[in-house]
Amino acid sequence: MSPGPARGRTPGQDGGAGRRSPVRRWQLVRAGADAVPPSTRRFMARARQRRMRAALPWALAAAVTALAALVAWTVLGTGLFGVREVRVVGARLVTAVEIRDAAAVPDDAPLARVNLAATARRVGELPPVARATVERDWPATLVIRVEERVPVAAVPQGGRFAVVDAAGVVFQRLDRAPAGLPLVRVARPGPDDPGTRAGLAVLAALGEKLRAELVSVDVAGLARITLLLRDDRQVFWGDAARSADKSAVATALLPRRADRIDVSAPDVVTFQ
Image 1 (cartoon, helix red, strand yellow):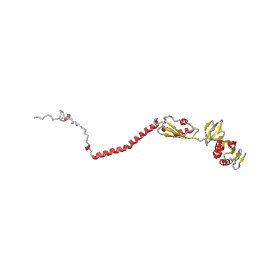
Image 2 (cartoon, helix red, strand yellow):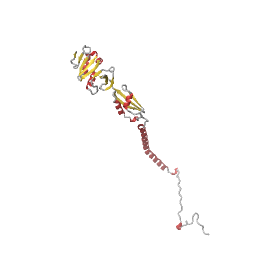
Image 3 (tube, rainbow, N blue to C red):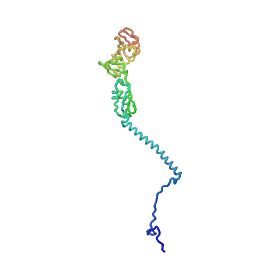
Image 4 (cartoon, helix red, strand yellow):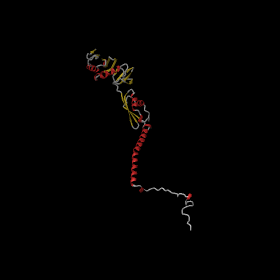
């Protein structure tokens, strides 16, 4: 009996030129957790932890940068923290409206972007303001604090009165002489006027008793300063030099009956 064909083969697979290689079939199989040695698992876990630790600072930096950019955009680029109120502190001679107009800060302007120094400089240009400071009061208020000039004298000018401070700055013009202020008569009041400075220097040197009798300081020239007192009495002062000595001598001579006292040379006094 002749043997039959081999099982599992097809004609032409016996050999010779027509023989084909057997077909291999691959199959992927997931290895179980217990197939990886513990040492390898520990090594891989440590490697993951190192990668995470190395990446963590960069991730935090990126998050902080993004948050800072968001905050900066919100504060600087939007009206969320814009100026809603301008609060004025210390103003009496000027109104709050005048100060806000001088500040020239637009409504809803980002509070963080307001130039405080420039705003204070604009407010300080108002004549009655001696000094101004500006600060932020979050979230939406700009606070302007002003120090106003202190009046020390009034200068008659063509039926009106220019009010000056100790530096000679004219910061008010009134229709009537302000109560409680002595008069200083000069041609051109101002901080750069020598006559104004001389008259104010004499006024500052007067004692309490002499000031109580004073009506005006008349500056006809730098060496021709005269005090006009009550009852039409006069004290010829001369120039502003040695004003403290002249004030002491004139005060001591007030009880004397004389229409004119000359203290221009305080060591040698004359009467009329």
